[in-house]
Amino acid sequence: LPDEVVRAHGIEVVPLTITFGDEALVDREQLSVDDFWARLLAMKGVPQTAAPSIGAFETAYRKLIAEGATGIVCVNLASALSATMQSAELAARSVTDVPIEVIDSESATIGVGLMAVAAARLAEQGADLATVANAVRSQVARTRLFGALDTLEFLKRGGRVGAAKALLGEVLSVKPCITVRGGKIDEAGKVRTRSKALAWLLAALDEAKDPELLMVFHGLADDAPEFTAKVQERFPDVELITGILGPVVGTHTGPRAI
Image (cartoon, rainbow, N blue to C red):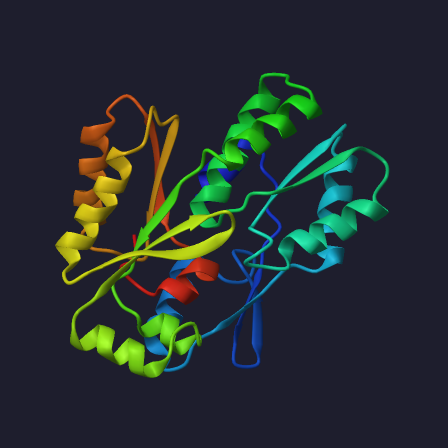
């Protein structure tokens, strides 16, 4: 989520850690989005990402309780993709002052963001803990996350695909199209050009039935404004939140992903 959205809704973020060589930096606290992209584009290797500790979640829970929270809804990165959810659950067991609902988003990046914003808005309207948590759980199955990557290079660097496959992809100018459902990343298609990759994204969006909230995030993509305008044309009456992908996702997608 953009920082201004986090602040506007009073959302507490428990960040992951990004490691460049021997240097471990906490996302947004010690490493800004701009600094991350500058580092990533300048380095030959690839940073590593690590889930928050149990202690980080416990600290966040106790901070919220000290600020007057009577219940906490914790929306997490898919448990199939990260140990974040496990840390959140273990921390919740040791904090018994207020009820804590720990939810697996079965999604990532903007998918988690969509649920967090919806939850925060319900809480602002005075909904009780059970209502907010149940609304988020219902949203898990209704949230769609699609992505178009510009290159396989960063997946190769991070060991997500073999060097031969990545090299073949670059030679053929293959642009991978991905989706996240049920907490797993699936390849949804391969196209040869950037324009076809973005057309695929728009086609996926066209299949959406009555979207309630849209988000478009990208890795410093120069064509993102044009793409975003096309999204707005399709759904002019639907709220749209935009921003730049952060370090955790950007590490694996690389630049120009949308």
